[in-house]
Length: 334
Image 1 (cartoon, rainbow, N blue to C red):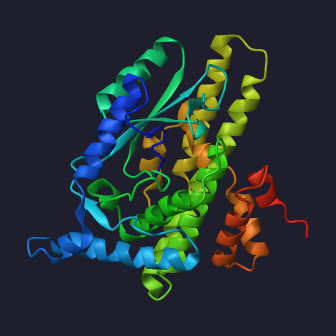
Image 2: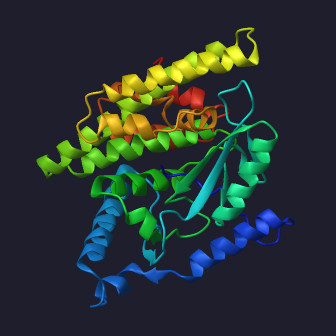
Image 3: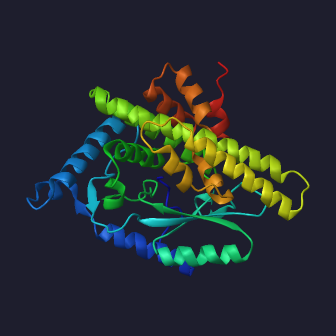
């Protein structure tokens, strides 16, 4: 999953956490190399060259959708590992909702990013000792919301072509429109445009387009099952039960969901293996909801626009300054 690294607002702010972010962001920025230079370097591998060219095509496509591209992803940073940052999500006992973290300028968000994985794990353990549920996510890409020209990195390029294109479009949505303290709206709409845009991007290659449609369809099928579990757990927590009974019933719901996942007819994933590995604790379900809860409503909006993704982006930009952009965006009364 592609998340925002929120809270990167400069080294002038007091506090060790902000200093950590400023240091990490500075390290990323100083390590940038021009994509043009990397492409011209004879030592560049054919695989990396192909991925960089794919991203440049995706940037052009995203600009055609109406997204702000400018200098985004015109540089590259060699980066070891599977992540740029580690994101922490926390939920309180008896709630399948993320405990918000609040930052200057950007407001409340459901996650907190760390360049230092050990630091993220230490803070997660602090919350666990307080009885909280936690979810730690490896984040291969984030957006600085247009404050900087974000680079491509090896973790961001590690997925297949479809996933890379989706991630680039997703992050460019964040650089185009960001609504303070509405993370579900920001992430949900970026996720949807990234998915739909990546399918259309491959339209000239039927085989790649079909593969991308299958990937997106499988992801949405998985998301529906996860959100159904989230709703079931929410209803469970509303009941007056002893802690032991609540834990027992929750475990039953989770086991039943894993059985359902294993039986899914997926074209791009091994359903049985997925059912074993997917994280279904409260904090991870809360984070997942921020990205996919509104997917059916986004589909309805796109349908009302005759499937025109350019008009969908125009609609998003048009409501960005409204008092309640989310309500305006989903209001189909015309």
